[in-house]
Image 1 (cartoon, rainbow, N blue to C red):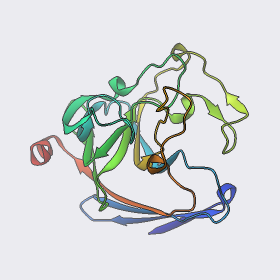
Image 2 (image 1 turned 60 degrees about the vertical axis):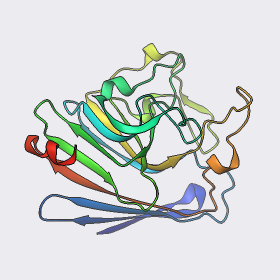
Image 3 (image 1 turned 135 degrees about the horizontal axis):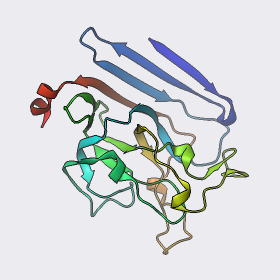
Length: 218
């Protein structure tokens, strides 16, 4: 099944193809076309979905254990990590994007019985970028439009953000780098930017898990 969206604000199209198998596995292939008119760098290219809040146990193979980004991941080594989705949130004084993990090969969200969902990267590139936590992106500072303004909702302190009864899972091609190589002001280096005039493709699989399956992928 193929679904296409026209992204009018940036004058481009986004395509997703879902292949659903009888055993419950879903393969998802994404393609974001290049924009011929947009000039602003893209903050994030990816997809997200939400799972019920009881699927808190996070196991993944990628860079960790702390948050890391494309230009902030040298000290985050590739390995097998386990924890809770709630613990992935980084309480910056002003709520903002946080908790990313790069070069993730696979990630599983499970409940206390080991039932849940396994996400496996299928792209030829080295893994995907993941965020898993009981908050939506919209729970942090949100602004209208592509240039981060004007302010639609302002969360001034981390205590303004309330945990939700869900786990938001981002499966991203990637995010723009953090930048600030001069300590604060500088934009990300060119190689860590997502250009609007480039196309992006990334694929992943969703595999339902039961408690007996965990030993098969660890």
